[in-house]
Length: 413
Ligand code: HEM
Image (tube, rainbow, N blue to C red; front, side, top):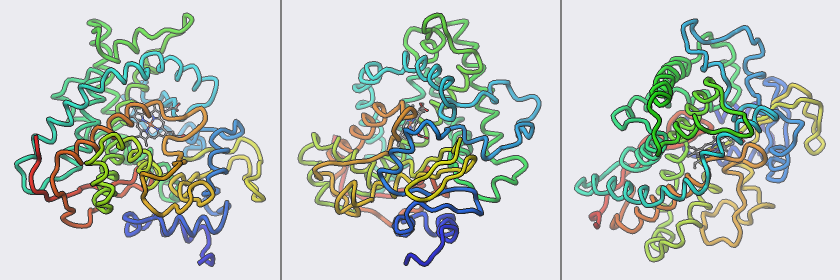
């Protein structure tokens, strides 16, 4: 099995046929150890300890665009695009810019503000399940997993609900950029497919911000972000718009996979579904195990700013470290018997929300949404069964099903 090269395994990962179950490929990568792949100037890292350490290592940069778009002048945006489109998300900035922006946003996006959302999220989950109650079979993705995080982040930010549907297409295009895995083809694309979605979304958010500046509200995150100030420092207009776009996309495209992957794992492991139905207090443990076993974000990447070594393998300055988080979660040194889905395991170690300075800012929100959605699904949907093996979207990183049809014997109130 260790006969295949790293490049062959990358090729297999790109094959859409691998999307439903990339885990055997990850296991083959793990058997290779950290592997430098000259053809894509990248190293694939799969050990848990290595991934964890690299995420915290200041010699690695989150400014991945310098790898994918080394020629700064090759700007993919049309001349009439709003200037905010060129302001990088703080997700892909390093200190000190990252530190400054993250601190300002954290002032509005606090764990306490998110905990306050719990009751309204629980009501939303119930409304969504009420809506599908009279369908003999329903799609968990469109009915619950996608609709919930979209409604929650739009309400938090103050996006009018009539406009939620606009984001569906834009956000789906943008996730192609977030997919962030170096395909040799991507680098040659003249206009990447995510550009129109990015430009349209920025136009929309620019208008929304202009409106809130004129008419601030007391209860929405956009108004709070406009007001957020730290020692006389504030977000510039472009930083504000770019951050709102980041929150909208993160709120749209990640938690959907947590809920859908969670429902799928529970349907395939009925004893754990029954345990959750019997005790909704175990929902947090289910969420953590889903984040480990089938994580919504499968990988991330960092750029080496100087030569360094991962184990004995050299990562040269300018090379990309592809951290296969989903593979690291199944490193037996981190999690014994890692291929088993077991929410009752003694300790769950995962990097599903990353680690280090870029640790997911939305983790408390995602955890609440996941916990409430999975607990309500188990409690209210009677005798749920998978109708068919679900189809997967094309994404390698934000990997998830496009549809999850479930039959049932009724949805209780
Ligand atoms: C289950 C759902 C989610 C997962 C698995 C997830 C995962 C992640 C990961 C892995 C990162 C770091 C990537 C890296 O290190 O390169 C990240 C960063 C981030 N996430 Fe999430 N996320 C989720 C939900 C959310 C939500 C709901 C929001 C907000 C609405 C959010 C906002 C952010 C932001 C702003 C960052 C950038 C943090 C920084 O760079 O300092 N995420 N997320």
